[in-house]
Image 1 (cartoon, rainbow, N blue to C red):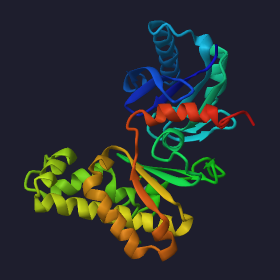
Image 2: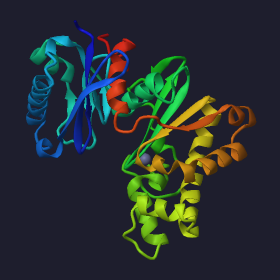
Image 3: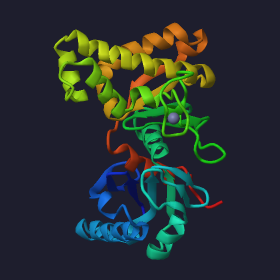
Image 4: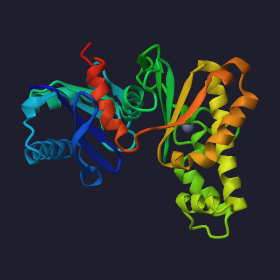
Length: 311
Ligand SMILES: [Zn+2]
């Protein structure tokens, strides 16, 4: 019986594998490091092939039971044509016909999608976005990503790179960004930038974000201020998004979002204060339901919704 989807979530550090059933339940999972194969595209693909076979053997789920292999990748993905256009953080990936490569190897329909879009799909159908037809999903990490669901469809943009919320400029001058622009939102709330801010604001520059969270929990004024300032940046970027798109729901996930207790009240306050009244009244900010699993759940949704099909 064919009813399972094999989800693969390719990240700069790790590649996660999960076998997902029709209800979005992950029946088996495993992980392999990306870095060991980073230098060579072919060796990375071969390593994924062999890892996939090992996983299927070890859990005794035959490859024949997979309706699809569904792969999320960190970059620009031409999903309808099954092509990886470009991966900025994994060298050597430019215009790779990955769908054809997988289908030649396994004979299983293969779907590709951008990793943040995959997370958005997972949260939309199985998580915090359940039942909504319009939403924005934002991930706070080293990079700040976004995925958009409009009228019950994933919105990809004409070149498949829509949703780059991290590169909304929130400052007309501001620091240079690796996207080529400057003053981008990500330059204020990306992980690296937050750690630099901790280095400037605290006596101990080696504190981590969880350390500052623990301090905030104890009522430390500096730590609370750190989160208020971070949330103010997030709120300011979202004011533009809320005014432009009038979404009923914004889902916030990613590592930094674990501090939601100290972030969300300020994010909400900034939106209520600065956004247009009708939009501000409508929008709800919620924490993502899934952590690391969202991308794998999204792999199921990509197949389920008939997205990523051949054009
Ligand atoms: Zn940028």
